[in-house]
Length: 251
Image (cartoon, rainbow, N blue to C red; front, side, top):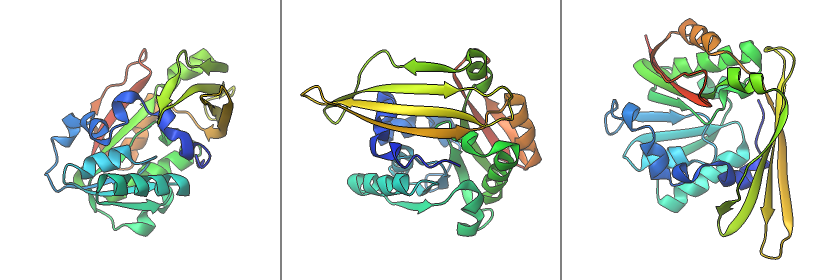
């Protein structure tokens, strides 16, 4: 796992305009949320700065938010306080989740924001999925979003500089991704993310973090979900699309 502790302070520049307001982020999952009772018990186990968790709490759900980064958990707690939302924020990586929560606890578990690839290889990914499955009640659902790694690897190592400034809190920034694509799927890959903030005087402040990741094919993910007792109900996987979502229910 990697921590995002540096990027946590500027993570809002990585969130799209449409998903920055908590209510709008939650609304992007309206289709799956319609399957839940109003007081559902929900876990966001890669919560980032808390936009989704706070949005879900705003709908009356009982929400727990976890992240491997202490800084992300702190920012989630701060956002919850700002919105007056009741969110329990806990620092925990995926493997530690069963140490904090009983099995069969949650109606829905979210693992979104392209986070699963930070689990270390097939073994780490399997352990992460096993932990998430354990915490779901029978019939509960895992909602997972992922990059289309088949597409990412086909493009090879590269520098991706976003073509426009992003404005947050009255400040502009340029977002840069540097991809290090390893020779083989099972090898450790790297993404360096840099956020270059530009102030009113033209001064540039750069924050960057080098993140490890282990990509996976969609077909591998399907097998791993089945192995931990989850059955795919919905999949938006498309080899030509940048990202996809999978909704899988616990058998």
